[in-house]
Image 1 (cartoon, helix red, strand yellow):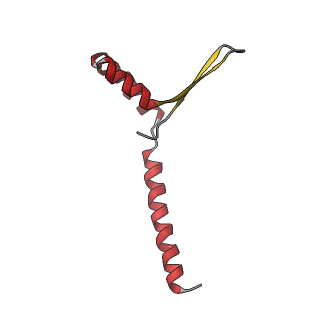
Image 2 (spheres, rainbow, N blue to C red):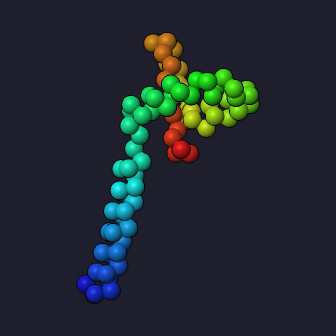
Length: 81
C-alpha cells in the first residue's frame, strides 16, 4: 500500500472519528428532554394552529393502527432536529 493511500485512510479515519464524536455529543439525555418538553406547554399554547400542525408534521414520520389489538403506534422522525 502506498504512503499516499495510507495517509488518505488515516485522514479519513480522523474525519470519521470527529463525526462520531459529534453524534455522541448530540445525543439527547432523557432528563433534559423531559424538562424541555415540560417547559414547552406554555409555548405550545401560544402557537397558531398552522404552526402546531407544521411542528407535528415535522416530528411524526407515520402513525400505525393495529385493528386486532386496537393499538396505535406513533413513529417519530428526528432527522430534521
